[in-house]
Length: 113
Image (cartoon, rainbow, N blue to C red):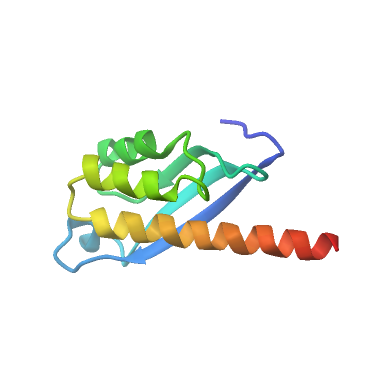
């Protein structure tokens, strides 16, 4: 897939429980989010789940939301629809990506001053 020049990639990470199946393959859970630089709208997403169907499901939940403005809706949607063992880790990784996006936006504004 080709992404427009106005998109950026942000990686959010979180720790995972030792009893989560993901722990057999990975040390951390990551959510890689491609979003529109100015609006924060989520355009695409990847995450390191054990099964592709799980990654696809997380992706389907998040695409279209705005990472800053819609964080409460994003968390609510994950809590309502994703009942896998990694639910808390997914939420934490999305919050981590959001914090990184806020820092990028803040630094971008500072550099323009």
